[in-house]
Length: 386
Image (cartoon, rainbow, N blue to C red):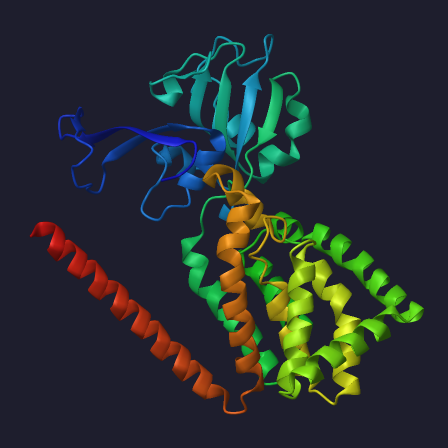
C-alpha cells in the first residue's frame, strides 16, 4: 500500500481490441491494465515497483533520453499558448518538447481517453516524463505553460543497474578492507563509476550529498573544541572515569558510562551532533585509561544511533509519532527497556575478546525467540479453533 494512491480498476485486453473489467481478487497476468488514482508523488513511487510499466509505454520507448536523466514533471497549459485547442498528436508533443504525456487532468479529474486524441484546453494539467532536452529548454516554454514543477524522486527505476551497483559497492568495501585505499577514496571512486555507468545521474549525485548533516556536525565540532579548551571535557571525562571505575568491572564500566552519556545526549539532539559532542570527552577517557580507541569509537557510534526513549532523538521517531498517535510517555515506556537491553548487550559485545561467541549467543537467542513466538501462535490458533 502506497500513501496517496488507490486502486480504481483492473482491465484485461481481449483479442478483439476491447477490455474486460476484472475483480480485485483476480490473479494478474502479463498485459493486464491496472488503473490507480493518486497524487503525482505517489505515481513516482508506483513506477519503482518491479513488474509494472506505464500504460503509455509506446511513447516512452520512443524517447531518445537516457533513463537516468528522466523524471516526471507537471505542467499547466497556458491560456493563450500554442497547445490550446490542439491534440497531443497534432502538436507532435514528444518531438517538439522532448517529453511524453502520461496523463491529463482537467478541473481535478483525469481524462480517460487516449492521450494522443485529447484536445488540450487552458488550465489542463499535464503529467509528463521528460529528459534533458525538455529540462535544458524549460525557459523557452514560458508561453506554453503557466507553471512547471518537477515531481520529487520520480526518476524511473533502473533495475538492470542493480548488479553493477552492488558490484561497485562491494568492491569499494573490499578495497577498503584490503587496505588498498581509505574509505573516502574507495567510496569516491565507486560514486564516480556509478555516474559514468549510468547508475546515477550527475543531478542525483549532487542531491545525494546531505548538506544539512554537515551543517549539523560542523558546529558540534566547534562546541567540542570549546569544551576541550575550557577544561569542561577533561572534567566530564574524569567524572565518567570515576563512575566507570566505581563499578569495579574494568574497561567494561568505562565503556558503559560513555555509552550511557552518549545515549542521554542523543535523546535531545541529533545523533550526529551527539557523537561530535561526546567524541573529545570519550577519547580523553580512552587515552587516560589505556582503552583501545577503536572500541571507544564503536561505543560512540552504537550509542548515538540508539535514540528510542524520546521522539526528538531521531527523524523517524517524529515521523511515526503523529500518524501512530504516540506520546512522549509511550517512547519512554517502550524505549527505556529496549535501551537498557542494548546498553548491556553492547557493553558485553565490546569487551568480550572472543567476539564470535557473542554472535553465536545472539543467533541462539534469536532462534529461541522465533520458536517461542511460532509455538505460541500455533497454540493460540489451535485453542481458538477448539
